[in-house]
Image (cartoon, rainbow, N blue to C red; front, side, top):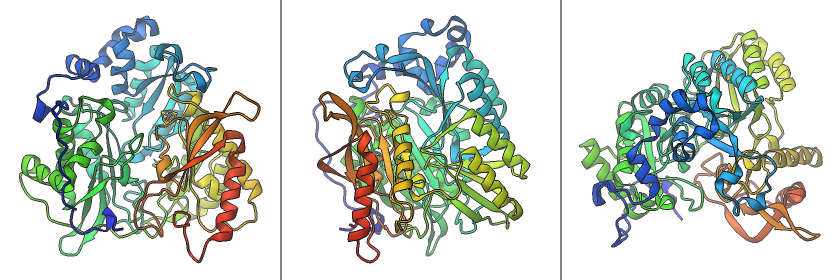
Length: 560
Ligand code: SF4
């Protein structure tokens, strides 16, 4: 079968769904709100809650927060209530939201393009230690997420973040979320285009502005100028992937309509070539199509992928060009298949002769102490720059050759590995039951325990390729389970001695464009294949050993 990434021109549009009911598309049905969320978003948008947080809620405490602000608008500023400790996963579906939630918040700091200075990193680390019980997670969207935040402390946290150029604006909510950018932008020897200017332009012009602050739901962006295609563009609402056009030179291949969760769908190429100077306009055009034509009646149909599924790429491109850009985009070919892994782990030479180091904690879990320690360590070695990645990892920049090995040793002591085992390298996990109100099972510790166990059991065995293990705490897909070799969807399973125990539904064979894989594919659910959390390491060990024994020549896990 020919994949979207291989087609030279966009496939024909599928017939548009006919529906007698309005879908809440502003340009088709008018702007009358068709559900409760749309009502309050129009009455008083999410951005407006900041003033109330500053003037009222932070002074009068959690109990003074209006319910719609608490469960709706505060997300526009990166704030979610976190799960009350000690409530087991069996109660997630039966308790009311207010019975599940604690009086503390998760706070997401958006880091567009993943670009950080050590000064910024230190500020995040200090906030974590001082206000967040030393908690911090690197997310798989290049954000850093803190926990245990009290509303009383939020204004001071904003003051400190904004003083160093960081923000939580639109880190969550029905808005353009953080812009994923290649973690090696501007430094990789083999980079095609540095997308930093474009990322900065998009965030400066369009984040926190009323024009795009009421979208049907979240809108995710990915932009890379690196041939490893390191930003999981296939599962974003809009993606730009650098390539060299045979006649037009360097620019981007445009993708739209990807997204996972309950109805996973890979994005599709529009077959259009976007020159670097047009990216921000094209991005605005796609975001505006979503705002104006996106479905708003049902929340579970309100992502761009549903509109693309109905329109098809040909119509989508036509509307983009005719109604938003007012000119045609040139046709373009797909970007070539990556020839290197896009997690950037290990030691790599920069374009200025210095080095960058890709390092990983276990499944994104760090702490304020680690982040502050890392800022100190980097500065001791003459570096002031680093990047977060879409794989829950960090890339440390500007390391001189003589510092590489001493720094690696010091990073190991800090819990950050530059030469991790294959399992530590390719395992990610979502927030899970520790903090997430939707979670059914624990994820971070379960995944860490499995990795440590697999490192012992498979020591000395030559695993021929990284086998990715993605662990989710519920049927949502924050850890991208459908794009992993082994994806695990949290659920409760019958225990051997009665009752229910934490476990996972298994998805096998997913993956995004990567070395040896020229097309992305979603993992398939294996009917009846479930594994308890306690048996996770056993299961992965069995399947890996079988794969090694059975595989032929260069067969990949997905092909096996
Ligand atoms: Fe929470 Fe589920 Fe997302 Fe995990 S996948 S962070 S449990 S919503």
